[in-house]
Length: 297
Image 1 (cartoon, rainbow, N blue to C red):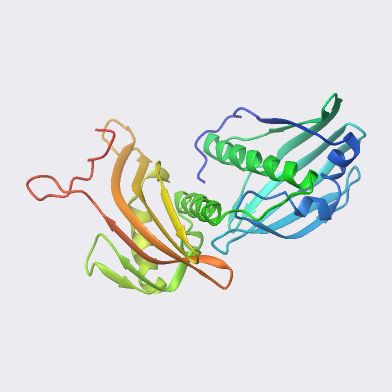
Image 2 (cartoon, rainbow, N blue to C red):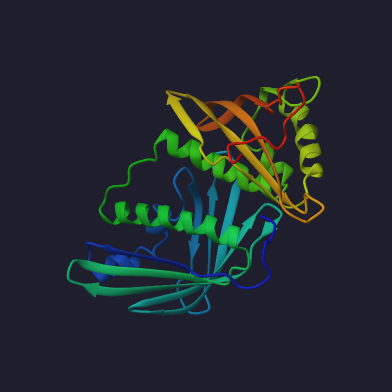
């Protein structure tokens, strides 16, 4: 994502109590096989994990998004003792490299098991921080299941929602390769502009790039009320697209545009791909496009 702030923002702080002794809770952060089971949000799959858990040692985790995009997180260990692990963490997503952050994990024995508290500092972009906060919450859910010996695969709906999170984040960065990642080679897309029907990912790519080029700074694409319906290897989604960018008015306010979007996905070769979408702008009573119309009034 494009940085939205230049000063440090609030830390991420996640705390859970797991009904296991301190040793297994701590080991889940240091054993690569254990880390593989939980160190990625729902819908993402860890593909490689290398840890050298000693002060000065390095670590790296690669994982695959539901749209086929590869992510990497890496860093080094600053401190390791019986009740605390401190490490640096940097995210790499294609051409985007996030800031070096510091993660501190504390383990405390309590009556019901072990309290694990994780804090992460060093963010300069509130949007990036908030997105990672959601990701950590999901990772802690998976950590709990892993420690309990119960690690069911994510639901198909969770996979689709994770795909959208990845897709919208790449688009908000105007990352054309990331935006194309979940799109099937043979997609049929009904777009805003002539010829209206675009067949094939290579036909959509320049249309998408042109849309990015029209957006101002700090572009954001969100679907606040995304609906997902899954049946077997097919999924249908719909919702209102909210696109905004800074400096969209003479007064410097954000410009907000709403449009409608319906999309169809098929699971192919183990991953979801978008095979059809239909996007359109609302129209005013006189027939002109109502770019500013939306549920916000």
